[in-house]
Length: 143
Image 1 (spheres, rainbow, N blue to C red):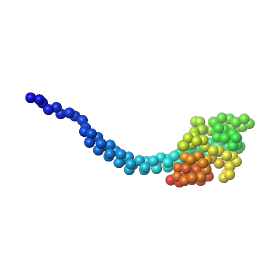
Image 2: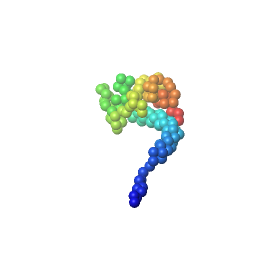
Image 3: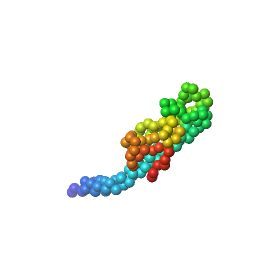
Image 4: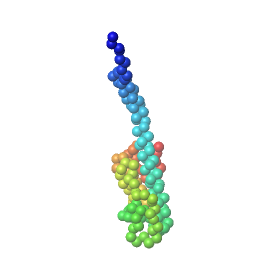
């Protein structure tokens, strides 16, 4: 007499049902998570710009002026020529790229104050909304 073997495992139908359920969950939850990612990037850029502003103010207290546009944010890490009272580095790590992988724009003198710090967002161009919104030191970030 032949004994019936019981095989363990899942049937193709069971696997397909699980895949469909996972797909539906991803379709419902995914867009919400991606919305949070863009808001987080905007907030990260704003926090980094504020950190640069604090470092620039500390440098100005030591040197008596902000770095020029030509000296740039690099002056926070490396002593520019002619700055005798420079007591940096004013940042503990290298100048990071913005959250979208582009360099921050530094202008001194600025159009909105002693200096302007700008991240042009995802599109890398002035203006825009959402993740393309510019993050600047002279106004607050939405969200």
